[in-house]
Amino acid sequence: MANAAAKRENLTAENKNELVEAKRARTDDENEGKDEIVPDTENILSGFKTSSVLNDSAREKIAFIHGKIDDQDAVVILEKTPFREETLTELLSGSTLKLEMRNDIYSSYQLQAPPHLNEIKTTVVFPATEKHIKRHQRQESFLVEESAEDYQSITLPYIQTQSFSLQWVYNILEKKAEADRIVFDDPDPHVGFVLLPDLKWDQKQLDNLYLIAIARQRGIQSLRDLTSEHLPLLQNLFQKGKEAILQRYNLPASQLRVYLHYQPSYYHLHVHFTRLGYEAPGCGVERAHLLSDVVQNLQTDPEFYKTRTLYFPLRADDGLLGKFREAGRI
Image 1 (cartoon, helix red, strand yellow):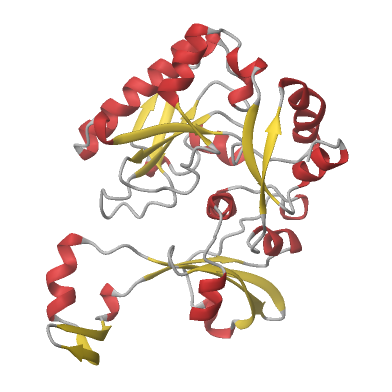
Image 2 (cartoon, rainbow, N blue to C red):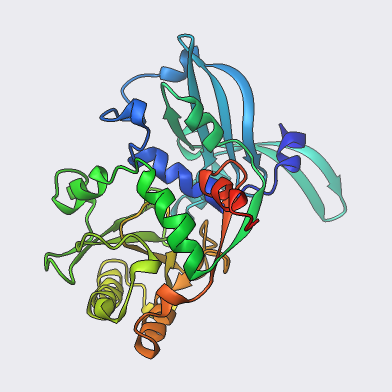
């Protein structure tokens, strides 16, 4: 596994963000109305038979494994949970050490931690379709250059033909699901939003704080739809989101990274709030747009994002990449 991990070190941000889609979204026609994630009610993995490692990363401490459960395809995602400061004393004093090497003042060990301090976050997608398997398989990524004309002739038609279900988003906004996870709720239909922890955050420490603000206003699919008319919404979300995080987590705005993705993982306006020191998946310059920059750009040019050329990465198996290739843009 170590050698395979070294070869697959370049786990993409898109792959980790798609993990979040797998946890919440129901975008496959054949799975419409079915939960993809199996609840923690039994040891469903007792009969799991490994077929292949789809992707893994030694640096990210995460592995995507394809296998079978009861002769049906399944994808298991294993992710090492972060160390927590409040458990370090127990971890160091209550573990067993096996010496590997000692040289002068340096020594290395294999540490066997107590089971309750050696958790592995596990997500099971079952039964998994071919789409799920490909979604988590290591793929090359390509940087796409999208002009305003490209968006109208390639990207927008592609989005409109896809079955991207947003029902799970509406369930959150209407408090039909995940209501107990909401950190802040502004009910205003025009400038309001719901703030809740992203599923990538275990909420056990602030070092990797990650929250998502979902706008109540519908019909804003992405950065491309934003104009100066949306400034009140963006400014309200920006200000109240920071205030809510300060009040709940005692984390000031100066330690937050607040941004939008383009392309987004799902086509309903949402904003990411992460701790500045945390290198969250998708926070790189090729995909993330700081909300403060978005506001200033729209103040300068009311239709800034409707007219400018935008860049974003796409995986080799992404249907949108295929459309850009067909148009001779890649």
